[in-house]
Length: 149
Length: 144
Image 1 (cartoon, one colour):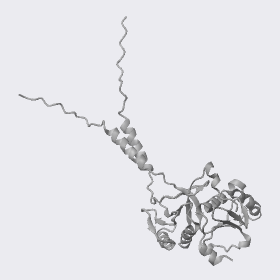
Image 2 (image 1 turned 90 degrees about the vertical axis):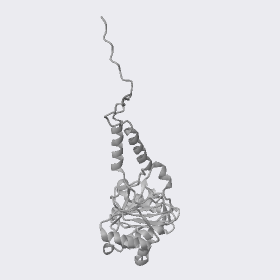
Image 3 (image 1 turned 180 degrees about the vertical axis):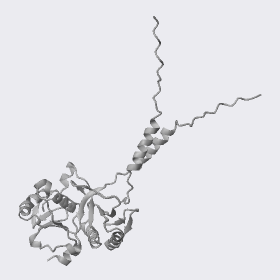
Image 4 (image 1 turned 60 degrees about the vertical axis):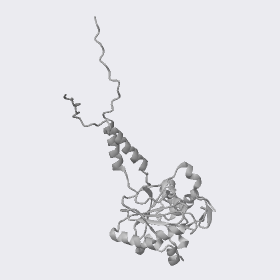
C-alpha cells in the first residue's frame, strides 16, 4: 500500500502577530509613563520606609550646591534664588489647593541649612504634608548610617 | 504593441509595521527614566496647634556634620536610638522627640534618623507619635 505523502510544512517563522505584540507594548509604555516635572539630578537619601507620593504633588528640589527649583506639579520646574521665593511659590500653590502635598527632593549631601530654609518656608505657607523623596535602602547601604560622636 | 501592466496588489503592505513598532518601543525604552515616586511623609503641624515643647521633657537628637549623633547629649549609634527611647515611650507614649540637625550636617543623616523613628512600631513595638524637626526660625522664636 502506498502511504500518503506528508503535507508540506511551512519553514518560515510566523511573524504576522509581531506588530500586534509590539503595539501592545507601546500602549503599555504610553499608559504607564510618568512625565517628570522635575529633572534635577540629585543623590537621594535612602530609607527603609517609603510611601507612595500622591500624583500632581508640588516639587521643591535642592541640589548639593543648594540650588533650588520649584514646580507646582503641573509644569516643568523653574529655578528660584532662595527660601523666600519658595515661600512665595508655596503660598500660591496652597491658595490654589490647600490640600496640595509637597515633595522635597533634596540631595543627601546638601548642608541642612538649605533644607531648613525650604522646610521653614513650607511651614510658613501652612503646607499640610511634606514627602521627603527617597530611594530604597538596601543591605549594602547599612554602613552609611550615622554614628555616635 | 500593447505592454502588459504588472498586477497591482489590493492589500495594504504591512510587512514593515513590526519594524516601525519596535523602533517606537526602543525609543520609549531609551528615553524612559524611572522616577522615584516614594518617600517619607512628614506631617506639618498647624501654627495654632503647635504645642510648646519643653526641651527638658523631650528627647533631643542632635546630628553633627559627618553623621555623628548625640541623643540627650550622649553619643549614640543610629540603631541604638530606639532601644534608648523604648522605656521612655513606655512611660509616656506621647514623649516628644526632637530632631535637631546642625546647619552643616548632611540632609541624608536627618532622613536616616527620621526613617529610624518611623520604624519604631515595627522594631520595638511602640510608635513614636510626637516627632518634631524645628527649623532655625522656630528655634530662635520658641526655644527656651
